[in-house]
Length: 256
Image (cartoon, rainbow, N blue to C red):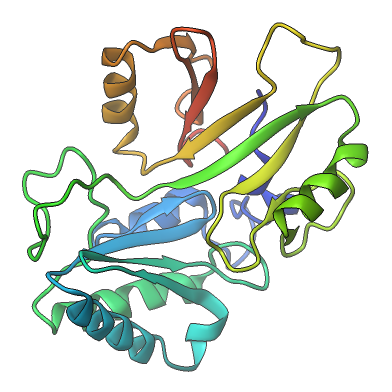
């Protein structure tokens, strides 16, 4: 497996070495204490809430904190037990200093409601207050990877059947596809050099906070999985179920 193009769209996520552009490490360091995590070219956090009404309060406060920048950088998933907040430049599909600034402004606004932003990682001794007791997991972003001999030939089918669109700045015949409303997992295509009839050709990439990955991997192995390869860790670990179907646990680390 190679690094998913979606996590590095046309190089947009590789911010290291560019004047005025933060590196992945700098992005992660800048937002970690505020309860955000850098995942797959975006910043993400969760705010546990006791009710949908409280969740809408959080959403309104976050939008107000972002101000006129909200439409270009912020989207939210509001539920009865949590609000999931994501920051990414919609124009470039990358994190810029603007999103880093907005993360801190939103966390401060959420704090004024007596709540906290947090990634819900497994190793947290205590999670932010307000949960209803329902099961939870860390923040994550899911991708579907499809192996193909001729990516350009199959990409139009997946774009049409899923109702997907091109990612910002990535419109080529082999580039990733994304859900235009941001609900479904992104799809990217991995080049095959020969047919592999005895191996699955679609697998999941589960991008998690860097401090969640060890816990997620241990849980998968304890549940009967096997470690296929860790040669590219901490960028990704290849795992498989008992029948050989693969999934990758990925982080932003090890990609610069």
